[in-house]
Image (cartoon, rainbow, N blue to C red; front, top):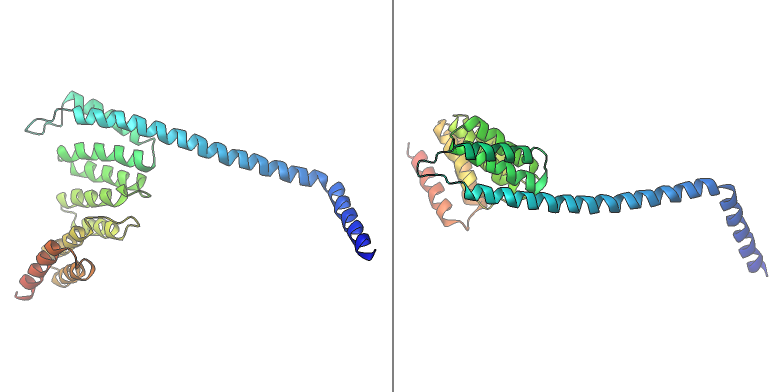
Length: 224
């Protein structure tokens, strides 16, 4: 009987608590429902927007493929200017894969024009938009190449280091590391160059081409 009374008392207490706090409880439950609906709506809208962005990107990709770059790589036609304007407008409004890929098309055009400052800037835009995708380190690598074309060797080294350290693995990482050694060697910073080349040997022993190149440069520096 004592247990039945305890259960009754407990039930009464719970009922009394609900009655006294029903407004706050209903508000809390209502808020949770609104939040849940909002989360579901967000992911639904986000998914639809991503699909739309990819569809629009596919159309722009097809346009890029149709541009007739001649043997002299004439990137200054009206057709190219029109595409560059459209792809830049699209990229500036997008994030993630779609934004990064769009910026990369613009960067390729600036690279073709040998407008290296603009190419570097645009590759960095691509890296920023695609930081959470595999396109991030690819864009950083290309930004480093554009920086080197301007004689900005220190900037190029920093970008290559970011490329290698990126959370997404970069398949050409040994090449990037070798490039760091090459840039240090160009600066006659031979100790840093040796360290960079040795990093190739340590971190990518399964890459015979870059192993051979790194060993040859190490030998060349050590005999100086």
